[in-house]
Length: 554
Image (cartoon, rainbow, N blue to C red; front, side):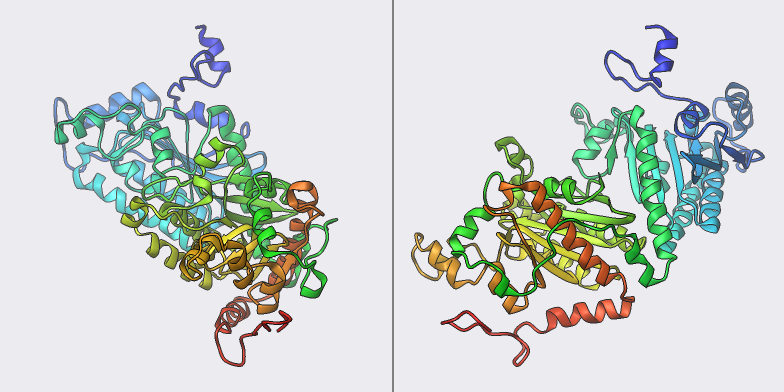
């Protein structure tokens, strides 16, 4: 192909989508506003602390790399903007001794993190490295600790750190700052790992599978948030910066002013009086909650929020598509949205495991909850699950522990949390995302300790008594409102949410605005005290409402 055509296409083959490696300044020119990069640390230069010689003296090798690349250290850092949004940037050039982690590279990353902390400006690192710089021995090894503690301070102080991992990112870079970002981004086909493939094959004497250690492999195994073609990277980074700029601005405002970031809504307000809700047969409600055309989590998020950007992976084992999470915008307020997703078609439902999460899904949810808490971002959770997945692998990987930890974490989060049960609310698998400050449900959703079918089989000894069990379990919105399990109910259009998804989404938006408006005015101590009391009352004599077996009233 013509070189000019390849360059116009940002170094991506227009025929096969192969992403060629970029020199660091070309990468910056693609991502940053023109002429916005103010380079710092131009004086940084590798030190030959060991007087090391392999096939040639290390000092000679450095001089050759400097002549070849026009760079002194192979890394650079400085200030810049993306569509006017400020950030601190640090980047490595793979063409300089394989982008390996020298003392100078570690110094550039560390200085960038320190500048980001000092100015409370988001940090973007761009990594391309073969690993540690062997010619610098343990001085290189210490850069892993040095850079790790530098970005650790950003996490402690709630300063955004975005890490872009490009082809290749290995060893001492991948196992330090590069994989510690709040958001990890990569391009198609980028190779990322700890040990190189040849080292692994020599050690385990096995042939590695196709696609091993590619960005796609990492997404599948829960290690990356975002996999984007090069043409979308600038937009993705810009969106993240904008959402975090709004969150940072809200943190600096008086509590009473934060509600002003919420928009108005044309939807029907949530209902707090159970007598205003239509009386329905519980089994009919169960069928509506399970209706194949009922709006799912992603449908409702698209209708209720102004934008949404998904973040993936638990960073431990896998990407569970039964739980979806990411940053969203409601008016001028940045929110974290986490919810169970089912899908509509057979292939969609299989991809999302019919909305039944495994431990990786709950651990992804917890990672995003901690992310939100770190930056003071309110959390919205969407519940629509028949229950947690009861598989062998889920048990092996700690399903109970994941659910328990999620409930405990959510109960102590220092940011406002709003839960909406939109379809099925099945047992502990639902509660893991439902320990919120405000717990709402849509009018034709249900919430239960067990499915009606399971209850009928176990307690009534009759698998056909599901309708009877549904009535006995008091799983519909009026009864749960009277019991105090729900704080309010989101009204649905006649015939159910599937009859008019847009109206259902507008009503959900109105409910979120109302709930968040109340919660944003509370300080952290009030928030935690009210949340504790909300769940403390259940089962406590004199505090727990009891329903009449005749009238259903409390």
